[in-house]
Length: 105
Image (cartoon, rainbow, N blue to C red; front, side):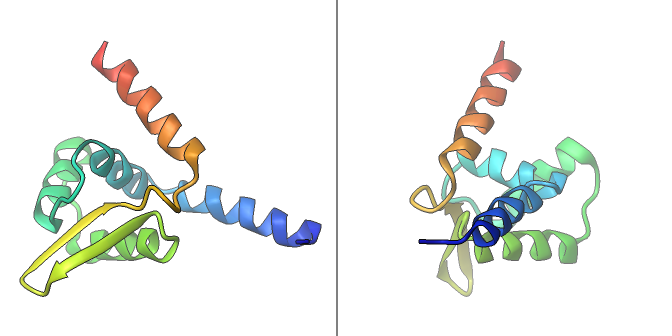
């Protein structure tokens, strides 16, 4: 059984991942547009929040991959990203879908 500190660290890690607006925007986009490429994700973020440095986008995609929130697949010339619905905490998906529903009203 995990000790209290391990559990507390895991919870803090989940919320730290969500503390950046770019990561949240990536998750929102992929929730609605699964199997998307880097250019489409970048275009969505720039429409939502203004110009994003490509290195910044790469950093945040890598962070989400490391947390197993998204998966990267495809060949070097055709990389796609999608939500890893088996590993991403359900409360994150539920929150994103709830907020997307509010936006569509």
